[in-house]
Length: 190
Image (tube, rainbow, N blue to C red; front, side):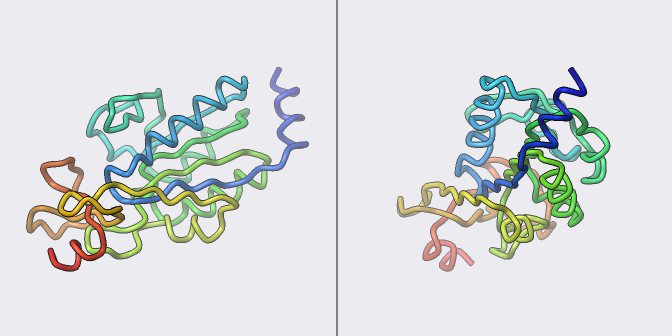
C-alpha cells in the first residue's frame, strides 16, 4: 500500500491552493469542504493547524459553524514536513499563525506531488499583510478570496476589525473581539 501510494504521488502533479479572507468569511468552511471531498475520492488526507489555535479544540479544525475535522496541531511549519509522509492531500488551517517558512514547506510538498490546501487571514487587524499568507498567495496555483458581510453596512467585508485596544498582533478571539468590515467602514473605524 505504501509503495503504491508513493508511486501514485510521484506520477501526480502537486499544487498549492490558498483560501484567504477576513474573519467570519468562511475560510475554514471552504477548507473543510475541500478536504471532505478529497476523502470521498479516497485520497489520503492529513490536516495541520498551529498549536496556538485552541479556541474550539486542541486537536480539531473547527469552523465558526461548528463543523469539525480531526487535525494534528504543530508548533512550526517544519513539523508539517516531518509528519506528512504517504498522503495525497494536506490541509493547513490558520496559516497566518505559522512562521514564514510555511511557504517553502508548501512548495516542497507540492513539488513532491502533494495537493496542499491552505486557509488563513490575509490581513491582520490593522489591514496589513499577515504572516506567510502573502507569499503563499504569490506562489499558489489557485487562490480563493472569500468575503464576510460588513457588520455596519451590509456590504462585502474583507477587513477584520478589532473591537478592543489590545495592540498584540496575535489575539485569538471571536465576535466579542472582532467584526468584519468593508473598506469604508474599516477606514471610519480607524
